Image 1: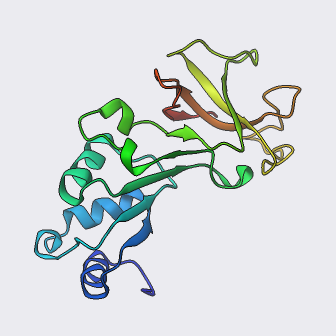
Image 2: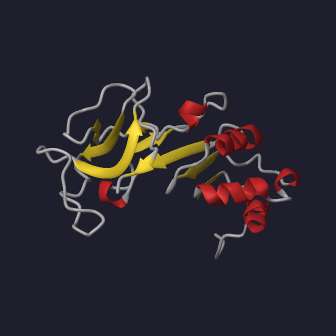
Length: 180
């Protein structure tokens, strides 16, 4: 365990300790990919690179897959929803499919994930909607603030994630913007 993030030290630690799994945010991954030592380090032990906390550029993700292999595993979520709403598994990270790489992944099985319009109706395939979730780990309601008023997506306890997304053909949401 490193006391702080420094890309050169992370690359060195992966090589020296034969690290096989780690969790990073996209900005950290970009810093690793851009580091001058990246191509000189033996990173072959790395089997899974978990990432989340913000969207990752599909172009940079493709670069990562091309340079590290199919080791990426994405978590999409927020603290109000038990951290995981959807995951994009390693085998779903297809370097030649930018739409898939922009996806939030598939909803986790313990949550009901819907994309709703402003009238709280599910949006048709491919249209933009707000990601709303319902399940045992989801907060009952999100607190009030001037920027985030208390609201539910529907009367059945669905909670807004405050992200807007279109659905893809395989029903994977692709987060595109935060709702204000």
